[in-house]
Length: 468
Image (cartoon, rainbow, N blue to C red; front, side):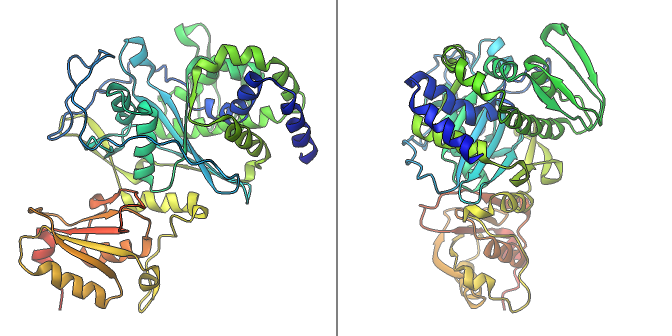
């Protein structure tokens, strides 16, 4: 493999700029295209409009008008170019596909597929995390909404970097690990690349019916058998939701196809032909790929992706055991995250990142909380005078570093924990000590905010605390 990579790099030096851009994007994004195609699901994408919440931005004019110029959200976050990748640090790319029904109707699209692909160049390991589109989270500058609305909001308000950048920021905040890059690939680019590599091998674990758009070709794939399918059928395979596990099954199939694409690219009889076709293919599909990766970074990531051993790639999906089905204020179906379960999955996948340690319950007399040295801020929304100071004194006696106590400026019934920088032992201790439910623990990743954790104590703590 080492000699093969050296030859590939040598060949890169001889290529024109367009070919280099294509090959760099291809080797890293061909993996992405396996799961970021537009979802051509008929009749299964209703209820995808922005949710109107008190205090949330109201889109000006018709939401179907791509030129709308509604009021800008007061706290919308701007975009800065990502720091140049040093080639040694863990790097994470958010891979996205868009809702094809929105395109067909001529409206601003929502994201329909989100997968985080994270690579550690030192250990040559990688992780993939699939995020359901109906997860109910805080979108920077837009209050709470489905995670798929982040892309819509960024496009509709014409924010810097558009929907892709706002989606990147949203996922980074929700998961709590840095996400440096994004990549959006449309369904035509997906089909074209799959066909160019000779199709992909899949091994379904349950019966699944797939068909090309318009019903031109229909197949029923039986479990336990290998199939090689072309681009259109591969698109049908990763978009199908009519299985027992719904979106979770679909996410697993998307990750399966990612790995199949990588294996197909690595075939020695495939890559030379792809390199030779690079200029023509670039012209055909470059408009279907949008990313903030520059040429150098794309080539580095492409070469690194080729070196990954499938056995060193962890796969994770936020499944139905990690969420609570609920209704939005508008009555739409949503999935409320169970933070401790999602943090546990995150830590298993991204622990090498250094931003999160393992979730665990400290043993009696453990010094884990003290050693973690998390900076904790307490806001008082309990309605009980002096309770915040008493709580601060008690927590400090237990080894928690409270750096500030302040008035929240209002009352709230339930205590809330916000995590700005991963401190799992401290968060676990605070949640158990104060009886904070998982639904009231929120990831709000921002290592520059000046604190690791903020606890806003509510009326429940005033009524039930056991402070001596």
